[in-house]
Length: 479
Image (tube, rainbow, N blue to C red; front, side):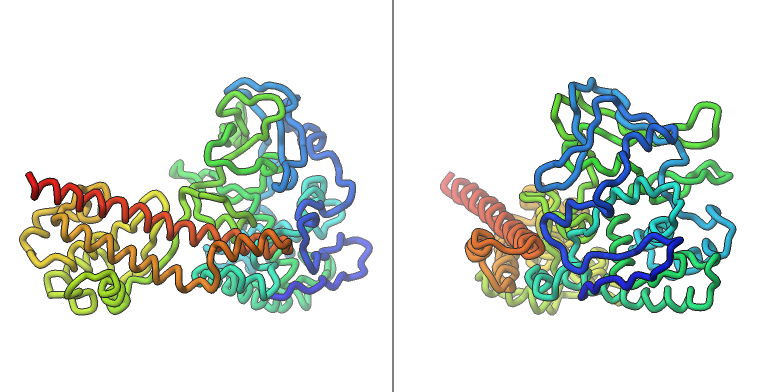
């Protein structure tokens, strides 16, 4: 999606909703205004608590973050936000016409793009001159390094079809939603207009959606009569400046405010934090697709990264033949094998054909079970094992060594085919990075390097397992 310069309405009672047309490495670290209010002072002034050692600092290539100016003991409260500080959006949060318009617009947003719902509220507050949250909003980044703001060539540079699909889908949504917003507000009076009669385009909508997806936390919201709580996305000023780590030193806790029905949101030291250490939270055990789509970064050697493939019988036949596996039957399974595929939800009208390689599981359990079953000829032997065993890579060749090695070789052949779908090799990608490229190009190249690395790691692991099994088989025969 081309990112056009936002057309700014010349209205004195509105803050401009301009969005940068292009992004550079430095612009990712620039805030909305050159000298925004002191966020720590604002949180304290509005009833929040900030540990005296917490400071805002430039965190290398990660932009702004929080650090400890001196040692902080484990269990210490780092930041405490009372209920009035988090930025939330719900149908019950307002009664005026402007809020009603936002609620109606939000109803048409798919659940998977939940960030756009809160993004509407963020845009409204950004446009409002006397917004309570302006000290927070003015500290937000001017631009985001997510792929919806990449130039067309850099979207292609991702070289990975599942992510390209998601990027294009989000871009199409933003372009369509721009028109929907325009229709919803075109005849509203000044006081009823949620954005102060400013024009809202796909670029500004993309900015607000990216701000929310990269910073919001999905926490417990309003408590229902039955005692359960609504899942509520919230933007948490200052807390959301913590950067990510899979082994964090801080965690978020929600507690009931003493003497009140409202909740306190706390960031608490999960481990002892040393002087000059960054304050880190775990954003989730996510693959690099989600980290890049929602947060705008890629994690090298991400243990949760994986590649997505489509389960296809003819494709598996070709892979197994290439691997030297005789008489594959993936595209024409026997009736009893087809029953197993149905149980794995890999056959039938409502089948889920998406399978993965990599990550914590290494091989998608459904794919592994399907290969084991379809490469087996003894129905009774297969039926001796429960489905969990057939899906488990840690199970010790449940259908025999020959069956297990054939399954591994078929997956390795799938990996070879998947690698061939990338137009470039890792060495070529690394050479491109050394030549100096734009920030978005660098992200795209880093992303595809990590995807190729996942595939190579799966191949190496399964090759090692196959050799180990064959060695055991040889030893057994000799014995």
